[in-house]
Image (cartoon, rainbow over all chains, first blue to last red; front, top):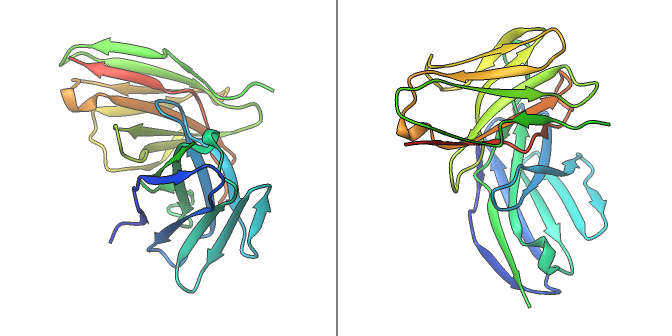
Length: 113
Length: 113
């Protein structure tokens, strides 16, 4: 089983739709979780950190389920500009004193008019 | 507040050559991580530098080496280039610890012919 798994998609949705992505992780000792957005041929940019209690930023909601070892990202009222790849990132806990964030392969979202 | 800067932006090399990529971290960050991203894949961890030492290394051969300088900037060197080394190379800076998210530079797109 891969450390971090995401459905690559693509998810093809109309403007205004609500879409949700899930990401599963294998290491139960993982300590921190993030969602990044990556536009085509650009660098990943931090979208949200994911907290145990769940957190919301405008149209975006992130949740963590430690028991089932997954995190989710919900996007409400999708905009054309939300079209991008969404990367799930898991920090699996210290290894040799360092923390090495591990990326999923990303989920592609296409929002159409 | 300067973000992460990488140079060069693009690079074309031939098989067998050597390449050096450079990265300056975001102001205040002390840790630099390097990732390789092939088309359609998530970023793959190469190595991480903290306090001028390589702290962790991913599953990459010894042809990949690096350095961190006293001002926290970093270099990635790749020797004996192979066609398969063609990818986007991303530098990310952070603070040490599990909860500090990565901040990425624009990346260096390396093409090996």
